[in-house]
Length: 164
Image (tube, rainbow, N blue to C red; front, side, top):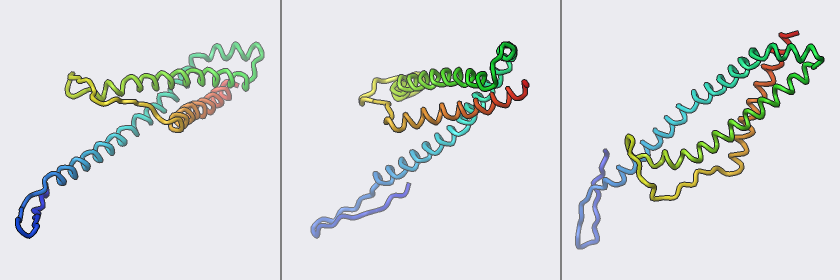
């Protein structure tokens, strides 16, 4: 810790003191910044793995439905109708998954904030309202569902072209 020796002099009394509070606050701000950077670094692999899992799950789903798709083609379904069917199902699943994750996060945030040690919990003295603004929530919905539909569209299209 860097402590600066400072003085206070009003002409009659001269006081020498060491300001340890400001250096402690500086250290805590540095530590908080480090934790925030570390959190963002940890989020990147989680997002990448989530997208990979989304793509892998879609491909696995299409492979398991190969027979169903063949039956639909045999009774006259076009590639566009099949793609629409798969994308609609993907949209419903993604929407329900996003809503479930959002509600789980709203429930879990106060619980996680009340953790004070390993398996030790204390009631929070402050009221925690873990809600996002409408703009942030709307952006998250559009991004999540948009990426799901973009990846789903490309994978479904390539799968249906392979089936021809």
